[in-house]
Amino acid sequence: MAKPKSSSPDAGGDSNSFEGSFVRLNEMAEQLEAGGLTLAEATSRFEEGMKLVQHCNELLNNAELKITELKEAYRSDTPQSGFDDLDELEEDSDE
Image (cartoon, rainbow, N blue to C red):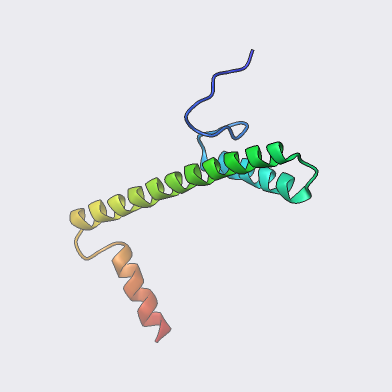
């Protein structure tokens, strides 16, 4: 019996992970580049690929937001230390 389609794209093993979605996207791109698909198959793969791209972009945006929030929380907890100090050290060593 076919399992119900979820809101996120199917990427084989773990359809919610960035890695799983990216692997599936690469597989689909290879299939499209290889040719031999009917127009309907190619169109379907392209549509699924666009959904995977959107899903991957959402995951990347969420990860970026989380990192920004963590950096801000760290800055407010520990003034004048942390990653900002590392940036200053790198700039001093470049001179």
